[in-house]
Image (cartoon, rainbow, N blue to C red; front, side):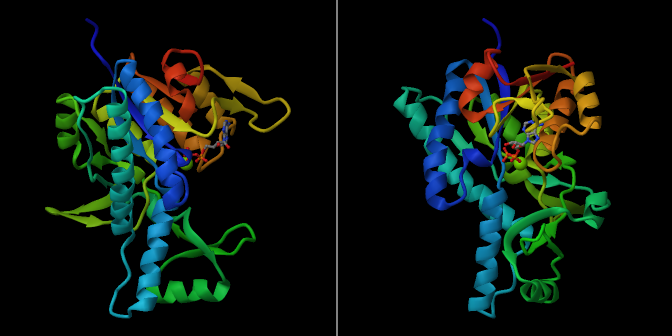
Length: 314
Ligand code: ADP
Ligand code: MG
C-alpha cells in the first residue's frame, strides 16, 4: 500500500469570510473541500489567514479601552492568538461535522495555538507595510499614534490605517506537538494567521507587534512536516501572467526556474499573489518530490488529481 500523501493546506480569506455569520457559512464549504482531500487519501494539516479577523479583534479591543479606561490596549500578538482560537473553533467544528456526515469517525480534529518565532532584526520591523484594522480620519490617526504608539499611514486616498511589520517566520515553536498529532492521525489546524509572532528573550518568548504572512508560515510548516504537497487555496483557480490584462495567460504547470523569472518580471502583486508564488517556489525547491499548488478552494480535489490549478515543481 502506498504511503498517504501529506498535504499542508493554506486557506485564504475567502475560506473564512469577513464577519461572524459569514465565517459560520464559509467554514461549511471549506470543510467540504478539506474532507474531499481526506477522502482522496491525503493526510491533511490546515493553516489559514486572519486578515479581517485580526483587524476585527484589534478594533474590538481598542473600543474596550474607550469604554473602560482601566483596560490597557491589547498587544497585536494577543489579537492574533484570539483570532486563531476563534477561527479554529468554527473550523474544527465544521470539519468534525462534515467528517461525521460522511461516516468518518476515526479522525480527531483540534486546533493548535501556534507561536512562530521571528527575527527582531528582520528589516520588516523598520518598514511596517501591512495595513490592518479600519480606516480612520487624520485626527483619529494622530490620537492613535500618541496613545498607542501605532504607526499610521495614509492608504490610497481612503483614510489612515495602522500598518504593522510583516517579518518572515523563522521557527514554529509548537512544531513538535503538531508533528506528534499528525503522526498519530489527527487532523490539525495550526499556524493560524501565520502564527502568533514572538521573539526570543532567553527562555521567554515575547509577543511581537507584527503579523506574519500565512503563505510563508504554511510553507515553513510544510517543510518542517516533510509534506508532499503545499496547497494554497485562494480566490483564483490558477495563477496568471499579465493578470487582468488582455494578454492574460493562465499557468497550469511551472518549474521553479520559470516561476523565479516570472517573479522578477513583476507578474504577481505584492501582498496578494506574490507571497503565494514565493512560498510555492520555496517549498517546491526545498527537496525533490515536493509539489506546491495554488488553486480555488472549491477545486482542491481536481487540483490534487492534476486537473486544474497551478502546479510548481523543481
Ligand atoms: P488570500 O486571502 O487567499 O491570501 P489574496 O487576495 O491575498 O487572497 O490573493 C489572491 C488574489 O491575488 C487573487 O484573488 C487575485 O485577485 C490576485 N492576483 C494578483 N496577481 C495575480 C496573478 N498574477 N494571478 C492570479 N491572481 C493574482
Ligand atoms: Mg493574502
